[in-house]
Amino acid sequence: MPSVRRTGFGSATRASWLIWTTAVLVYFAALFHRTTLGVAGLEASERFGLGPAQLGVFTVLQIGVYALMQIPTGLLVDRYGPRRVLTAAALLMGTGQVLFAVADSYGLGLVARAVLGMGDAMTFISVIRLVASHFPPRQYSLVVAVTAAIGGVGNLVATVPLTLLLGSVGWTWAFLVAGGVTALYSAVAFLRVRDVPAGVVAPKPEPVPLRKIWPKVRQAWSVPGTRLGFWAHFSTMSTPAVIGLLWGYPYLVQAQGMSAKAASSTLGLLVIGAIVASPIIGGLFSRNPEWRMPISVGFLAFALAGWAVLLLWPGGRVPAPVIAAVFLVLTVGGPISGVAFALARDYNPSHRQSTASGLVNVGGFLAVTVTALGVGVLLDLVEGVLAPQTAFRIALSFCVVVLVVGGWRMLVWWRRARAAVFEAEERGETVPVQIRRRRWDALRVA
Image 1 (tube, helix red, strand yellow):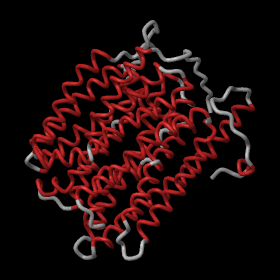
Image 2 (cartoon, helix red, strand yellow):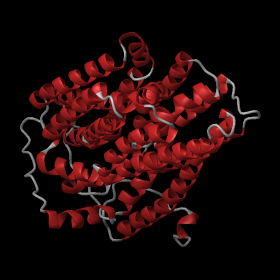
Image 3 (cartoon, one colour):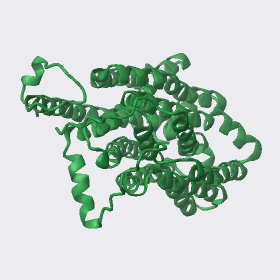
Image 4 (cartoon, helix red, strand yellow):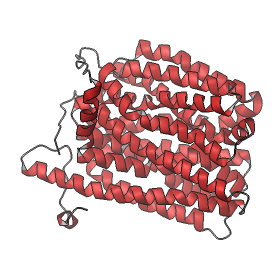
């Protein structure tokens, strides 16, 4: 595994913090827009006359576009810089939400969510590139974690407050205002964000002709640390995302009999848990990078136990405190998923960093896309035939299947990445993270 040791500056300046604040508000907007359908799903079903599978297509399309855009986004950030890409992202998200506000047909609604997904796709990679440029390496994991926490506030605003806004001013005005404000903020991002700190020479843009795109992507993908990041993101962030983005609200209302307000409040726990856990986990990873993967594996064990509680509870009607406790456990996966970007950053040179970050980001959103679609299809097959509790038990079991597959591949690539680190040390190279050999490292890697 190639070793990359970046000799960053000592500490971030006040200007860098202000630039990061401006940029992170675009990410805040992205999380708000991404999760609006999580609490407006039932209204969308009535507005467009949709069944569960058709409703699921909204999220599948939006997240699918997000996933497909990750590699192009990495290339765009490497070529044009995060400032321009963030500006375009805010414009696209605002336009998509305005279209969704006035959409009166299923087809136009799908177009709106696709445009929204394209803008959303450009935000996180741009922000973490700014973090890498403006903050020293020792602060990277912590600042990325705080970024995720602030994005979580946008998610929180899309739960109870948006539910109340939809009830008071209605669908059109709620989404029209949200889209308009986001589009206008693009001007602020363009004027305030700077790609590198003052006095630092920006790296020369690297034009990537079409014929060279695939080799560049292949180089990033060939790094075991990148591949490990892909599967870590696939495994850790998909469960809380699927619950928060689409299926958590219908599950709580239809299968668990909660009121709309109670369901929104329960979903809010997913966000509050992430907001609280993000800086804690980010700080822990910054101080002890060797703990990143053991903590990720431990989360998978707890996540599987949480799903077992929800899906196997006698009678299917789970007590509200138990649901809340399980949701709080599952939501930690979001902050832990930041390990994927630390891996991409550690083991790729700076000119390929955004491309590698895009690749690992594909992992999580590929899992979300597949899971959201799988749950919707299963629910469409059994809804009306079985009781709601049983129908959701069967449909949500697909989340466990995806989690098991992702966990298996993550373990495989963890061992391969460790082997690459040991080989680099034997060659006398400096590695970003010092790890100790274990007896199971001597076993043959599958």
